[in-house]
Amino acid sequence: MSTAFLTHGRLAAKNLQLDDLPLLVTPHPLNDLTPDEVRELARSAYPIVIEQLTGQGTLPKHTQVDFVHPAARQQGRGGAVAA
Image (cartoon, rainbow, N blue to C red):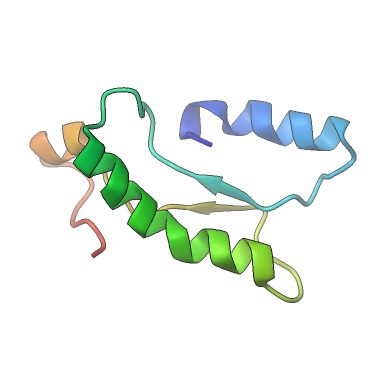
């Protein structure tokens, strides 16, 4: 889910009695990403999704995707993007 909906996601998980559900958090907004940017985001998120689905033991309650929104890159914020 994107950062704008993290609180809502946590509340929804709590209502479903899944307080410790690991969530993957992406930058917000997503609607203005190009198809290539969506693929870049997906490549960054993929290892986290695999870990959350197959990991053993305790996982963090949420993990931020290592992806800087293109608008933030243009403004010189956010640093480098993971390959």
